Length: 100
Image (cartoon, rainbow, N blue to C red):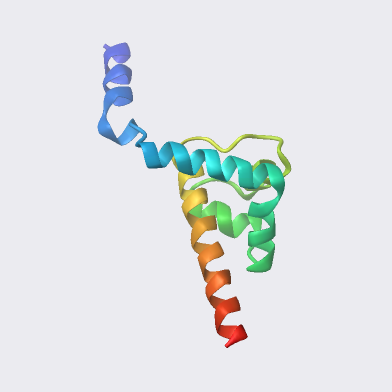
């Protein structure tokens, strides 16, 4: 019975990744690997702990993602990807306003 419950949970729509989810995961993994995610976080003066709280993981997990010790996975990684994307847009907007 427990096996069936676990199987049903795995097959629910909440656990299905869309094509955009897969692309977002690939992109955040690249950004972690090349240091862009860390750079964005530091530019915005946000701590690992603050990012982790928004993504549903410990700050130490975010730190491990950024130094390449762990690979971002699952829903927390998707939240991290979306957050880094939003911060990148914010930085670009602020640079555009400063140049005006």
